[in-house]
Image (cartoon, rainbow, N blue to C red):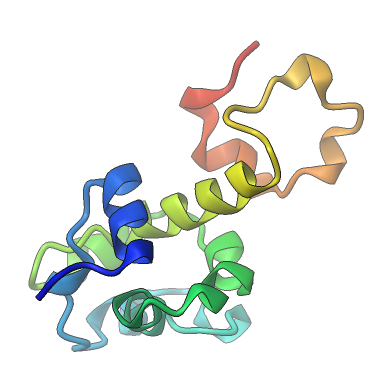
Length: 125
């Protein structure tokens, strides 16, 4: 089975083979934030497997706390948290940013907290 374009971009950023997910739902069952998500974590992976780019417009990647519970629970070793991070990165890149330069951010309150927290190692000071 060949990867679709969205899967290829996710894999390039995260190093994750999304096709390894067989939709058992253990990632979603362990997530503490599903009540606030518009898609459950395993559904996000299904959207990516189908090549449905509307997943980039969902709130779920921004609600994800990157706590890695989902990744630890996955029986197939899919790093769901890394996939969520790659979705956030793709959206940020589409807006013309490769990295976040804090010197150029006029109001830090305009950035979602997860963008700062999850990508802290990538920030340019």
